[in-house]
Amino acid sequence: THSDSLLVSSSCYKKQSNGLKEQNEYIPLVCKFEPDDNLVVQQIFYEGLMEMVPDTAFRGLRHHPESLWLYAAMTVISLVITKCWWVIGVLPASVMCLRYFCSRRVIHGYLRRAMNTDMGNIEKFYMKPQGSCFSVAVLEGKVVGGSVVLQRMSVDQRYRKCGVGVVLVRKVLEFAAHYGYSSVILGTTAYAPAAHRLYQRLGFCCVGVTNGYATPGGR
Image (cartoon, rainbow, N blue to C red):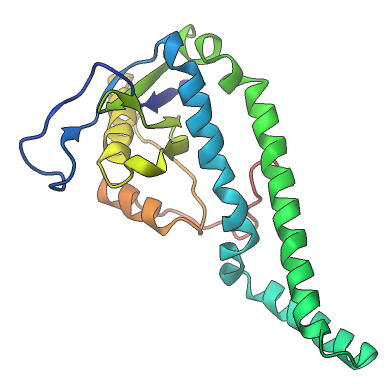
């Protein structure tokens, strides 16, 4: 697979002249991945995926009304059977805890698989194959975000809204144009409206919706 992985790392930033918000002193630029960036890249990847735990367990529920109706029905039935009002509080809380546990388990399983393959050996998977690369983006001398074939895009929470996502996506587009690809395709979840706005701003459009989307690592 031809792939382009991005992150932001040291020695490639410049003073901004205009465009970004006033509080942002530097414009993130993209550089070539170096072995010294490996630990930071893996950490950002880990933190970005772990954000999906509450997203899928809690915030994602608004996209699944059938689950909400099921939980409500379970609560009412349990109340009728047990005639205990405290069930109204205990049962939903228990269900939410179970959802969080299951979501965390699935994400951890996906992380283990990723660290045993491409993210555990970036040099082998993205630097050596012809037509592939792994770049890093740098803001104020720090690695702050990354993406792999426009998958696993992740930006350090402290450096969001600084233009990092923009330079990462543009680098992927430049990579695709350089190698003669006619299009760039990505998939994202319904739980990420900010990511949707970013992609649309850079020229992407929605070509389809998959209702049966599974959490990474899930079935």
